[in-house]
Length: 424
Length: 161
Ligand code: FES
Ligand SMILES: [Fe+2]
Image (cartoon, rainbow over all chains, first blue to last red; front, side):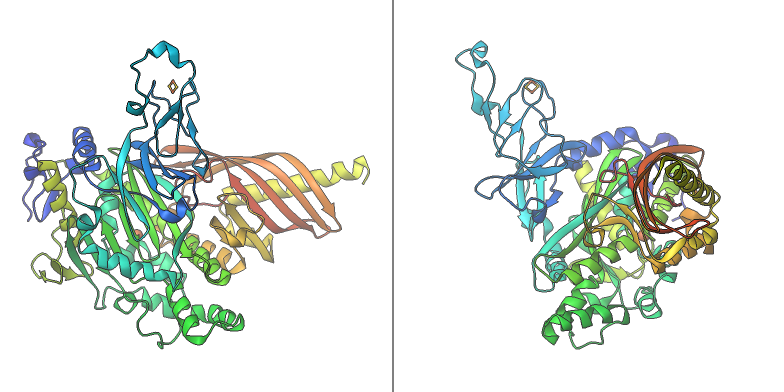
């Protein structure tokens, strides 16, 4: 375990960079490796690009990224969703620079080529000069294969990859559970916090499955809660676990009693949700629905980490975008209940603001330690980064190896997938 | 109001807001809390809204959240604020938007430079204050700080705007 890594002779060989119990420092700092990851991972697998509620209507669009590549996610007139590279087929200008909105077409600002909602090239000014054999059908925006699961839209450049549902595999059960936060209503996004952190993207990938840091890094958040909530979030002594779900995905259950939000509805309503419960009762919601909504508002008791860029993290979607070897953008997307009670959605918003984003009581402390990692790897290139926590006591869970909630089982799952993809 | 009254008010408001800026740069947060009316709201929006309570913001603080936030800064357990970034800010371009009895609505531009790890970042914001005149000074009823690029990718903040 305490063996050093031969940093001088470190190659780009995935087998040498990743062992089951440790990874090499250059995993966070090698520019060459970062470039390879773009080709071998972000261009080869399913990447989360949007939630269906971000493009609710015909003509709704939203800008996103697949790896570093800018894409447009758009819903066409028939309701079908397309994901295409935001780059004109003439001489490469982006055809859209508005974050989100509604449109009937995309027109390139440079020479006016016009594209339909499905990316097809519709018209171009003065086409005569291109001659008779110019084929418009060959000059549509570059399209990605697009599939959805439970409203989560994924896209890929890889036409040969397995269907999304197979790729998600054992993670689907947890996505289904996560979506119970709709409390009987469809889940919809309620806005997002975005921030950039000077760190490699894998530092973020790891963190969603790292419960070990929670009581340390988030002590000041815990101190801002009432006693009951603080107890709920003090989960390292509990019955939680981390499980490898295959394909790099993993789940970290922190609060087991909040795994299935439809179960145990007669459980006592936590103090901090009493006012909401009363408000809903006053609005005329029957008691069982009040309890279901209130339980949903509190969020799920687990983090689901989806390789390589998404997470269903307790009460929000966490999306990462690799920007450079030492820079990663993060989106924390708030979710709520489509058509649900206003009071419930408002409380969701306040809870999201409490922890997440540039001014949350949690994210800034996370960002600080992630940046510390990137600063730390400037030294000691021969030292390993340890992901061996709990390796001895791991046992077979429902879908794969399972360890204690604070174990690094989820990181080992992600790095096994990383290695598999980088070796292909 | 005649011109002298308007000029006087502008000068009083300016003095108050400059002293608030100095308090925030010095991180004298207890003094900052004293500037507020208990029902006051401190908001950093992401997008414009008629009702900020109905949308996601960077921060939407009532008295309780404001005090919790200050406590977090002061207790020393938050790694991002122990130590926090150092800030130097200026407020200018004051415009009095409305005066109604004791209430004054004033807008201004703000530039803030932060330094941490020797890395400096520059932030700019439009700020709108709703102040209540107390005769000798003012209290803050509402402060809305709209950062440039508030709906884009930001960094995390270990201080207040
Ligand atoms: S680059 Fe788009 S029309 Fe020329
Ligand atoms: Fe964290």
